[in-house]
Length: 480
Image 1: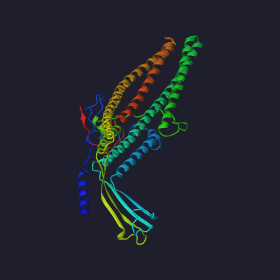
Image 2: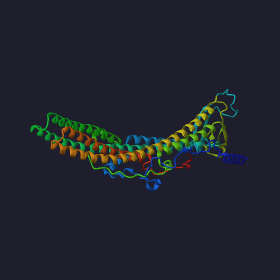
Image 3: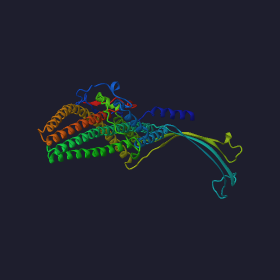
Image 4: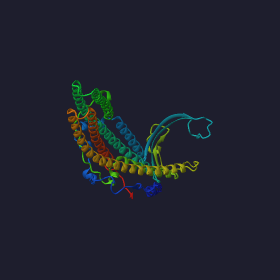
């Protein structure tokens, strides 16, 4: 009879164990375009076929950049902190999973007692002085009829996945920031080379002007203008050096090194500008870790609703307890001293002043909040791609036109110097032509740097080298 009742309880528990009060999960719909507006002449291709993966910065063909980027994963403290947060999330998930299993405990006790002669519950043949020895093993299993534990596990799993994607997002962001700082620094190196050449040219021009002044051909004003232009160029060298130092310090920090012990030798070789396809917009949902993290936070909030609603129903557990109890040590572990019990227990809150209802509303509001955050993350991702595509498009056009302008400025300077030597024009014309040529050359170098930075930002916006697709993610729902 007892076995039959126990079997009945277990069968009933199995029938309802699949119950869950969490809403059916769906990825929030997001407005994703079928194509990028600013794609222009960029090739649209599937990301798995064309997008740089893993060590994406190697497309720039710069060994020193490769070396610096390799330090980020192992030395950056912010990334190490994110990994520690993921370890915490993993530990929380393991705690939640432990609730799926039975708890087993053991109890042992020995005592010697004396009862009062006047104690009314003392038996007639019971001695006043006696021993008590007990050994007991108990098992308790939460049947989780309403899915509370399973939803806690689901929420913990989603949080752990989101934490993993946060690591990938931070790693990608740090890599992109390092590349940006590196491109700025190399751009300033090229500006320093330009200014060094300019200073030498201006020194030669000053010598020429002073020589002409000594011969009575050039005026004092011409000499003053040449001196002013030379000193201005020398001051610009110091300004570029100061800005370069800041980027060098930033690179050191991102790479996990002390700025006071870090230095990069100047290099003026132009960095290769790769042609990076934009990819299909929908692919952002699989390749961007911040979008994956936002989606996992939605799933976490969805599961928490199931946890909150389960609190309205009783906690049902199955207990099993057995052992031995005796007033003598010998024979202690014998059949007559055996004791056991088995059966379900129920615990339910009947009144809590509306606390459970409030917790449920809070969980539902959290789901709505995380859903909107997911949509905002998707929209921001599309904006960032469009921003960098437009930057590359217009910077490319501007670079071509500035190249033509530089050729014209160099020709103008040549003519001005020739006419000045012939005494046809004053040194003011030379100064004007030199200033225009320097300004145009500086702008060309700046545009080259900005194109490199925009290309790295585009890789960042497209998810960089993040190749792993989010685990257990449903197919995204989109609206147009």
